[in-house]
Length: 332
Length: 188
Image (cartoon, rainbow over all chains, first blue to last red; front, side, top):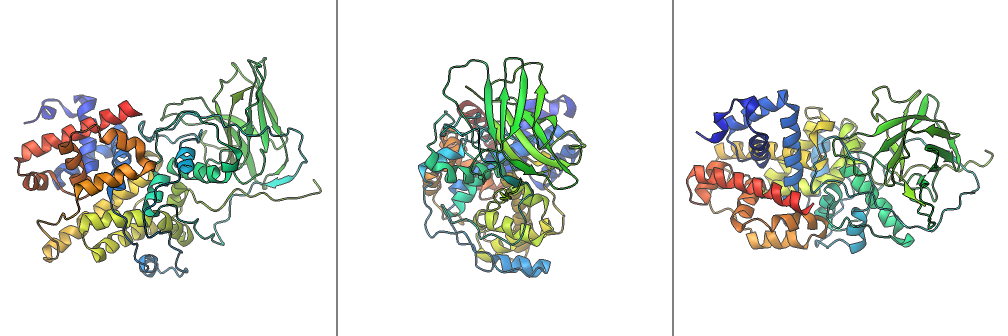
């Protein structure tokens, strides 16, 4: 009899429960033991979360696998099963595993992104939001209409070129938490960076398009500023500023065309938010911008996100639509 | 505004969790396949040690997603970990069936060198953080975690393979998990 059984299930130390979750995710339990854990997890969200955390941790082990060819018929086989008639994908495979270019590995850690509820604390935990030095974005900018429709599912874009076969896939899906030290990223890397921001966001289960961040090199101690925009835009679409009076002002830098029946909603996440924290709504964001009185000025590193929601904002109080834009407050 | 310049958010890279939310859409399913199938195939190949069986496991995962028999949710953690868990479940089913049919290889399967495995892990900069934590474990624990997760060995199979009593294998796997967790917490 192991120590675990000396406790009634609900009083077993968390340690043991977490390791049982680990054993389940590792796949070492026999079918009876595994079924018992599965059953228990249905009633215990904490156990379910622990299993998910272990599954995420252990997924890294797949980086030990040799590169293997995905059979050319892989998609056809699935398509035949489901009766879908779509052309075969262009497979993203390279003959040799290539190490990721350093700037990619670096950029991978740079997303000051928000995180989903049960994101494991380590090492998949988010890097801290990192201020990114870019050339100052002109605040006065020729207005342009911007359509914020989500990207169409079709026509299909060809997959981006391979950057290291299956290992690139792994890198996209399981971002490294190493190397989270703040690093200035030259502007020339933006294309790469954007791609990785998306990839990292994908790994986090949230389509955050982190925008160009604006770091002004003044010494003003109080005001913070964030530029909020989509990855594809050449410049931010919103400018967020806090002032000494504790107000957060969101100014549009372009004319935003929101589809009928939809509203943009503004969300915030404090710096170094716990993995379980979900973005907090700051309410609907009119296309013309908004001034929000705040109890306390948000600290540097606060993340701001803009999602597209049904008219009036998300009914659940959580992000329900696609996150289109994001930015991180930086002092200036 | 008089000048309408549509700027559509970048469509090129689909979000995995978004794709997982729309797997009844064949386009989304195919995008998901593009992104995840090579890694799933590699994992299946190690688990099943047969290309045909591995393809069957990968296909089964996507068919399951298409039919809505497995749904990724907010509580499921990180998409890749979840997908690999689905794959492992399918691989176990297929392995057992092949065992019954006398197709599954038994002993002596692991031709892959553990040193090569470790070298691949070490060379993958994208997982440098994990590697740093993993190398803090004893070789024995590293190997047990790898044999269990990648090769799909159960406690009983680990015991047989490492020539130790099953209780010892169980304790070693548990210690490996505990040390990995500790190392990941230390290095993060």
